[in-house]
Image 1: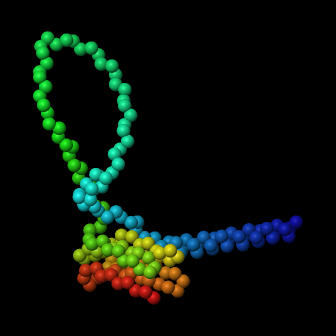
Image 2: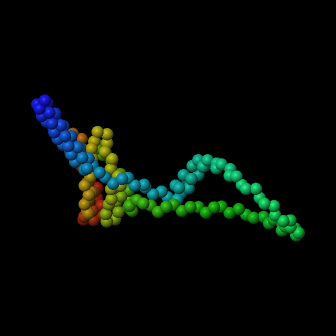
Image 3: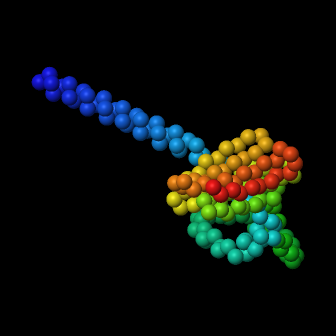
Length: 175
């Protein structure tokens, strides 16, 4: 009986150690792949108007029940004659302010994936980075550069954007 208990305890300890080690390894690898979520690219008022004209109309609203009106006393004077009125169109809504970083948004498609940067006059931001099928990705950011590395087996593709000596410059290297 005692020998069986020792075997069960040894098995439980080995299983717990293996599970912990596996979780730690996966967590470590996945923690390095985080990147900023994609941001929407602003559209112009003309594009918004074109989209609004092709959008499907909203479904009709169901009729609402109106209370029955209470009788009003009769007028002794005739009602004023109706005057024609002109219908005025509803004001055009203004598009919301863009939430994307200012600058020229450029995408860099590589064999390992796609990196999209917003390149401003003195800095840049990473808009999105997406690895290709079968590739993994890692992102590094500092005050003066951003590096996106796509890797698969022994293949590596690096998209490097720096702006420490002037306006942002993007360089793509394949190893």
